[in-house]
Length: 332
Image (cartoon, one colour):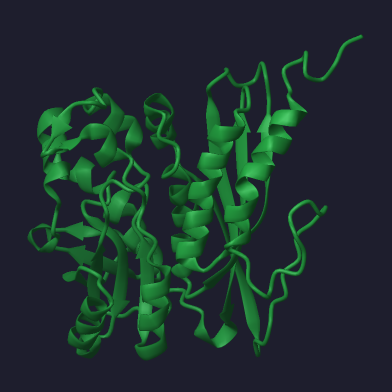
């Protein structure tokens, strides 16, 4: 008689994985979560909002995961999965409410799955989102044993009159860049080609340690800024770098101007550029170049916002301004 386990799907290993991850998942819950793991659907009470608008986002971590799998370091890429989603919805002023993860593999290891999800739980804790559910899919024959993929989905909320959609961005506004923690989760197909020895020491650190540094989560500090200041636009600097992402934060008749000498570029980006003989245009159009998130603000508020960001522990700096234009970024 054939069994599901003989076909490559081990339900017991799945149950073990859930047991291992339950405690960390529960720590992300709050009073708005109305049921526990194991129900057919997760329930979340929205609470008291006058005119709430839900904002959703979904993303993965791309080929950064290949490094984690090869080096058997699984705990940070879960943070990346959360960061990529919550930073995106933050651009519209949304506070993350809850998150769901999707984990797929060829052959499930309960320990590996639990470690991956522990990173997701940490990312949820850091962003104030509840991890209310997920899916772990063991798919033998589709994925090879040892292969995993992870993605996530989040929902946040913003009052309708507080939505940030770039419509208020105007000529003369100033662009503030917030420092990234490194490459974050984008450009890794090129990064892995240039930094192929993950055990090499570069700039005093092992390459895998540098490349697996998790994406920064900007949520809590930016929400504090939004409580005190008017922000006209925000951009999460992901795939496509400043060149592709900044124009998304404004109307089609506005153009961002960024000065390369004002961008505080970490040395690891320059090392990558030298080794790969990569042009400035390609670098700024692929990587965040040390700027993980941007605010577009009124000129008169710049100094106060920079001071507040410093108080919150953020490294922030002016990188450019807004001009009337055709919605393409001008890199000077």
